[in-house]
Image 1: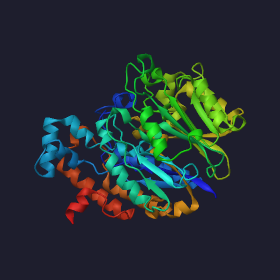
Image 2: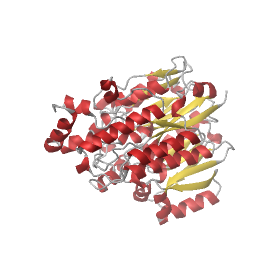
Image 3: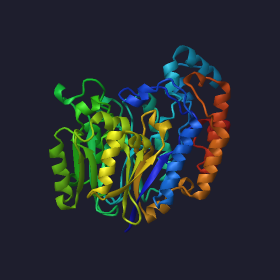
Image 4: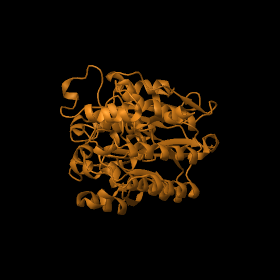
Length: 448
């Protein structure tokens, strides 16, 4: 049965701002407390979705989470009406207020880990929302992500939804940003590749010294069990701790795979040659196309600055393979030289498209961060909520919606503006009607 990789991109929310909340994400820290442009950010994301949709890539949309997260602020002791809560938080705990306003759910590569029905023992699509334990501002997303995924993929005959892994650092899970699937065609059983940064009782020389490692081996193995994957078709690999200290906070900043192609940096993993051999042995050595980038070709610093490996590696309906890369790759002379050589060489990749996603990039998220890959058969796709599947009409409606509701200038100091709260809620209320999702936000339910 034919299957497709559907990219469910995060729609950038109206609270997109640069809070600098993600320690270890160099770009996020660099642009902390500067002005953002939510309108431009949302339009850049929509433009990427539309462009890929026009090429024949199936595109879905995951709506932004409700922000500000008043419920979390109440749990932290702030009281009064909503505006009093926001004003008190701004005065007493501005960093917490920024965390409860962040639009970070836009990076849906962290939303969940997804295993297609071709890989699971019960032949259903399995979802485990990420607990995102490593950062407070992202850890509050898990409940909202679960609700959104259950709303979109609602048919229990086809989809299985697991709860986020239990809290605590042992099971810290960052979702699909540390998960890749290799297969000969999306419809065939594949190899699921889990990457972690630390494990219980790891010796000091196997851990980063500067920045935290966010994914654990224990979380990855738990997801593999929950998804009922064949152990002979699963590979676990540890991130290189030196790479984490260089700014590689997720595996999708240092490698990307699609079907039988793996594009990766030689410094991505602990014992990279061993990792590659295991993937080849479980896949089929002669069927893998390995594109290894050496440090002498592109230093890790350039890979992180350009987000080369956060490109989307895609197979089009005509079977050609393309890379969708940040425009920063084109502007980095070391990376651009390598890319020119790649597409004119023996690689299957013959086309690179450079996309302007600067609003997201300044906060540390490139093209691949903005999408959650969900492999679906045609029947499974028909069982999804149709209101979130992108077409020309929906694209035009969402573009007009952004133009109507979004600000073109936002600073963290603006977050307690009473007008902003009203603008956000009007925008999200309209959005749920456009996407036909019902009252998924708390403020909508409270009005009833």
